[in-house]
Image (cartoon, rainbow, N blue to C red; front, side, top):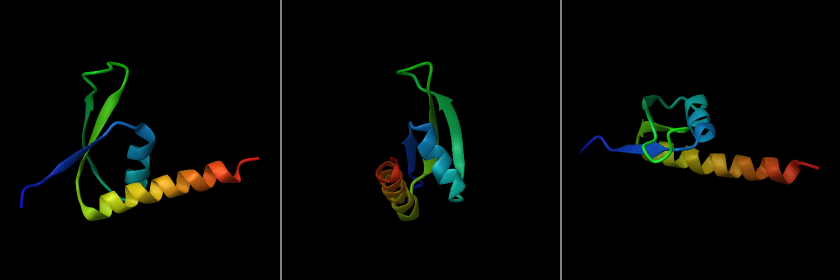
Length: 66
């Protein structure tokens, strides 16, 4: 099995993943937009599940605002 990686382009998603104990392997400049960075993580089912939880968490925050 190869070590597959996933590229995250959102800084907040990167922060969420690191908050949930996933290690960012590398940070590089985005070649399409020099004002942004890309964050590289090792892909896994747990990482994908945590990414899905971020979307749920974000939706709950938006629904709870006045």
